[in-house]
Amino acid sequence: MAGTSVSGIGSNIDTQAIVKSLVDSERAPKQTQINNQTLKATTSLSSIGKIQAALDAFRGALDNMKTASSFSGLSGTSTDEKVATVTTGNGAAAGSFTLLVTQLATASKISTKVFSGGASSVVNAGTSPTVLSIKQGADTFDVSIPAGATLQQVRDSINSQYANQGLSANILTDANGSRMVLTSNKTGEGSDLSLSGNSGLETGTSVLATPQNAKYKIDGVVDMESKSNTITDAVSGITLKLTGISPTPSGGGSPTPLTITVAADTTTLKSAVKGFVDTYNALIKAANTETQVTTNADGSLTTGALTGDASLRSLLSSVRNELNSMGGTGQLKSLAQFGVETDQKTGLLSIDDKVFSAAALTNAADINGIFSGDTGLLARMKSATDSFAQKNTGVFAARSTSLSDSLNDLKKQQDALDARMTALQTSLTAKYTAMDSLVAKLRAQSDSIMTTLNALNNPKSD
Image 1 (cartoon, rainbow, N blue to C red):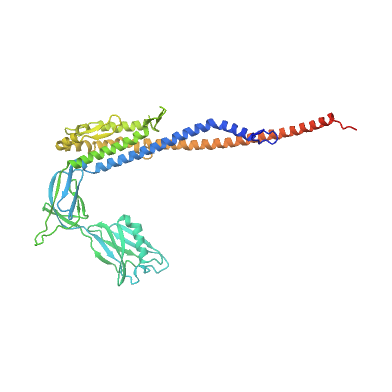
Image 2 (image 1 turned 180 degrees about the horizontal axis):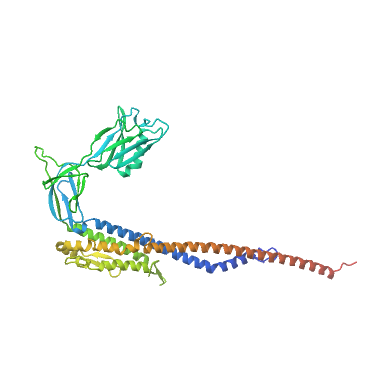
């Protein structure tokens, strides 16, 4: 017939279309199920990954805020930052003291002998590797020097292996040749570098700098020393970073000490509270995005991948419970009392500047008490989210594993369905091909019979 696609030679029937239709009909229910479940699992896995990332960022920020001292409402200043800078930490108290620095802590620095051939001089002229051992205190850094290695290659090997451990090598070149200079970021007495081994570099070394301790006085009372220029234990809660020697007046006389002052700073305190608010809001916004319900143009609703998800509800309930709990030992025991408000619709926090400023002027210590310490809000929120955030055994990690397993199972189901449909198509094709051949034979027989009958009905005349 005109307009008909014919694949059956004998039957003039489109057997390919019939086979395809039967296979598609058989595939459709299971394929739809697999597609729907795959889409749901993939979307949920992606959403859970986003929640995990937001939770990790939230917990990391909590850790940073716990180690910082911003909630104390204190900040430190130095009258001469060319000599020393100051940062406050947990345990700091308001007050001031003088600091006199007479010596900075320095590191050991040693040099190899001079190689007249420059940086390309061959250090190991033998046929076997040698070893250069660099010793500093109880630490030993071994460097293998292959046959034919140059001074430059030894320097590069040291830096590639031990730069992250504070050891560094450089090459100095002058008219006499090149030498390798070794130093370390470890300072203070007892951190001397020395060379040994069988490389030849350990012979003829020179000491360019002997390590020494930093020397200083606080309030001019006692001579003090430190192996490092960063001093964390001299004054409780305060870190001093020594950057220079106290200057001596131009007319002569004794060096001039600087003054370190630790005082209340409401700006720093508000910045810390705002940092907490922003961190908390980031987590809530991530959760809202994955659970929002959108109304479409036709009035239908599209729900987020985690709308109604029990794990996410449990997480949000945990952090909100800690947020609303009373804490601290002062007059202010809740966030609302110093102007931190919660939007009832979105769950996001905001700060009422007027209420906060009034509270911070008279109750800064109370605000610090709410956030800081082992029972403070930061520690409680970190603890409340532990079971959700653990990498391998946490709630969301378990969900991710389960969804990944489901996707793997769906992939196996898809492979099995494809194999079954291929077998079905092969089987149906064979059957319809056999049918087509049979029809062709029957038609051939029919045509033969009709020819014979026609011949009998139409005898030739004499």
